Image 1 (spheres, one colour):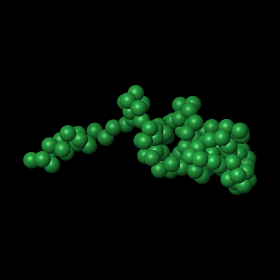
Image 2 (cartoon, one colour):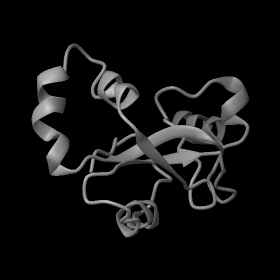
Image 3 (cartoon, rainbow, N blue to C red):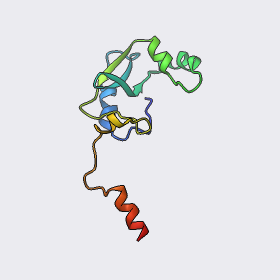
Length: 113
C-alpha cells in the first residue's frame, strides 16, 4: 500500500475499502475521489519487480500506473483526498474546516499582547 502523509482526511476506512476488494490477488487498485485518481494505491507483490525497474526521478509510480490497468475504487464518501501541499484557492474552499479552531489572526494578536 502506497500512501502519502499529506492527505490528512484519508482515514483507515479508505485503506480498508481498498483491501476489501479482492477481484484478483494481482489487481492494482487506487482510491478515487469524485472520479479523480488519488491515494492510497495498492500495489500487489506481483508488480514490485517491474515497478522498481521503472522508477525514475520524482514521479514515483505514475508511469507504471498509466501503463497498466488500475481499478479505481471510489472513496469520496469517506474522504476528500486533498493534498495539503497542493491546494489551490478553489479547492481549499471545499475542504472541511474546524469551527472550534481559533482564527490565525487571533493567535497572532494574543502572542503580541
